[in-house]
Image (cartoon, rainbow, N blue to C red; front, side, top):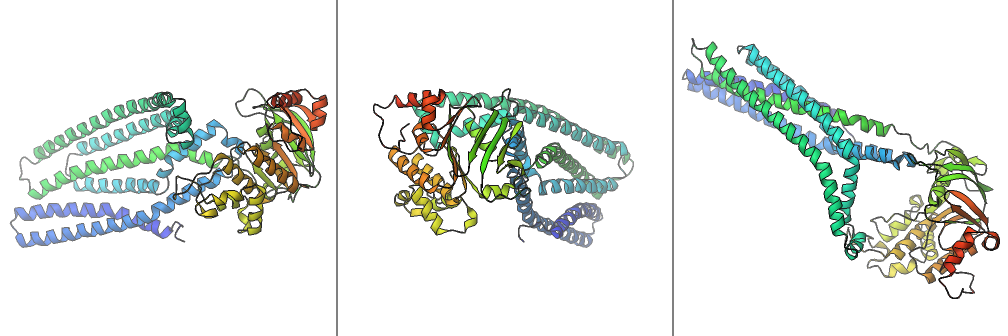
Amino acid sequence: MYREISIFLMISFVLFSCSIPFFQNVILIFTKKIGDSLSNNNLGFTIELLIIQASLFIALQVIMLINKFIENKLTPKFLFYINKTIKEKLTKIKLNLIDDSEIHNKIMTVQQFLPQLGLPLLKSLVSLFQSVLAVLGMIYVLKNINVLVIILLILLSIMNLFITHIFNKLQLHIFNETSENIRLRDYFSRIFFDRDLISESRIFNLHGFFTTKWTELFWKVEIPNKRLNNQRSVLIHSIQIFINLIQLLMFILFLNTTSNSAISIGSFMLLTQAIIQIQGQANEFVAAASQIHQILIYLPSYFSLLSLPEEDVEKGVLFNGLNQNIKIENLSFKYKNASNFTLKKLNFTISKGESVAIVGRNGSGKTTLVKCMLGLYDDLKEGTVKYDDISCNEISKVSFRKNVAVLFQNFGKYPLTFEQNIRMGDVSKNNNNLDYSRSLNLSNAVSIIDTLPDGSATFISTEFNQGVELSGGQWQKTALARMYYKDADIIFLDEPTSAIDPLAENEIYKQFFEVSKGKTSIILTHRLGLCKLVDKIIVLDDGEIKEIGTHDELLENGLLYKDMYLAQSEWYTKESGSKFISTF
């Protein structure tokens, strides 16, 4: 309940806010009465008026205090709701859209102005209405003043609003033009704080290079903003000077119109305070209108983000595990704005229970192929990915993902405890200790616990909670344990042991192929010695399948695989007789 936005509180906030200008105008009227009473030497009546005015001022402060309490209560609720909405949307947007730099810039734009939505927008609308009420009340109070002067003040405020409108549009244009540079600038800035990159940066003496890159990008972003802000300041302050001259004109006109009659102290006090307040309210009106306009300029990006196509995770045929095979038929894929296809007319079949290695040079399309097979990229230009003769796009993504486990090359390193990092493989298991112990043993990660100060409860990040940092190999074992914890029917591994020592790697693969019997496993690897253990090898090059076969078949009849295998084996003087070779 405490997270829900209360309609009653919102209405109360609006009503209290709208009552503030009423109290301010009444206090202003009492100022005149007090001045007139002083000129009549009526001390007793003056004291009564002062007490009433003080009571009104106290009441105003109480209302403003209550309103502030309401604002403080509503602000985090609005912020939570809007942020939660965006985060939920980002978990549903199709992955290929997030990979698009244009969409990424839009996400960044929304993230930038997100705090202005919610209550700040409501506050600006209420402040706008407040200012209108206050100015109308003061115009009525100043009804005896030359109407041309009042009209001139209003016109100046409108001109101020118009100028602000122009500058807000220019600000958005500059932000859109520099958003790419902002991301690059922030990236180079983060390098100085990234512990994984600090060592390399120092060894290669890169701090000067990165400082230069960051400096160039910093000023590419800031110079247009500086120019715009200088122009804005000159115009706004020029308008304020002009408004002050208009106020002087107002006093002169007032004195001229009353030159033949005595000016009461109350009337003069009323005039001076009203002029100051009307200028203040006009400025508040312009500020509120400017804030609303700025939000309205950015708001299309917010709604555009919310309208992006989502994955329909529930719709489709239920998938309870592979029964026959995975078929890739005439599959082609091209990234947005790319001139060439990453994958080109791929055709192959993986039978249930088969272990398959996908090998090839860097950039040959291996990871893209896996993302297509996982249904993460579903906007295929040509062809289909089928599980048991059902297109991946027609299968319920929820049921499909329950039966698939994956270890990406860039796996998640979460700032949580060691045990939590593993159990995230399947958060629905409610702390299944049997699967947890099994995953530790299969990944050879059980030995890591002994090195941790608080065992499996140790926080795995030195950035938080006095945690510790794991080595690259230890992280990879932890990620493998996470994959094992899910105990899925289909397993995808992308360079699963690249940071693990050969002896541990050999043991891990022995266990993997033992426990994965009956499961379907697809392994992306550059370690071609591993290919002796799989049922089938698919050789990719430049997005095309060059060869398919077993290790022995490809060594005898293949070309590219044989060249790659022999190139690796040249580094070793003698090949081990063991079946399990992890050195190449």
